[in-house]
Length: 249
Image 1: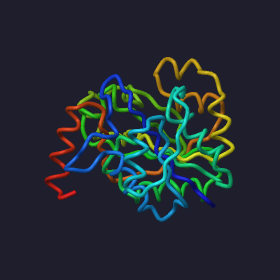
Image 2: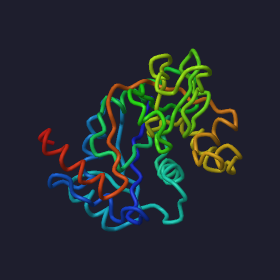
Image 3: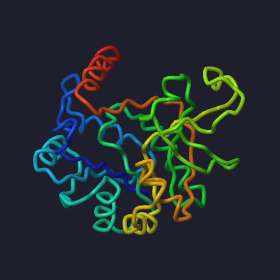
Image 4: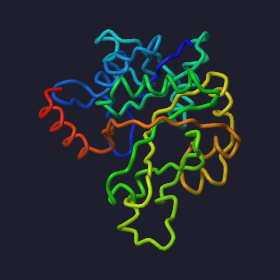
């Protein structure tokens, strides 16, 4: 299977403008992401998809591939679809978040293996939740899976609800998973989902992947042990800088 890695990156952001060009230990975030993605053994190519010339120049200057895309995209998924249409011949696309500068190439490979070996329409990563802070935080998306590892539901709530058990004992009585926001799509499926209208559950939870489940698509999951560090705010950048320095990254 021929798989294309796409990293959507935009300059404008209400919480952190210019985030892809923010430097972490002397290297821009977008270059860190594309460097790590390029280390994946399962990707045939990696393309940064952006609508900003400053980001494009940074990517090209460092020897990586970039494609200018429309500035009208509502999300990274539709930006990936534009790139996929302009680059035919790939069986699947992996949407790699541009704000996770320490993503492990093995996470990408794991996702690629799932979409290659299964019949699922989409694949994504999950990780075992270890703390109550994560379990009950609304910004941490939880996933419930079936016996084959396919997603049944995603929620900002802690799910499933454990009846008759005090909440501080939930982690002792059940394995909970958090969702890691990286996706692999079969190319034909990607072209379909960007044209699907929003659905009630998606609107309720503000989670795009619920639209796909509501439309009957199968989302396979793979469990990762690697922790992701997403950069959403300037405060996150400070923590990332400290992490990079402590680990000589």
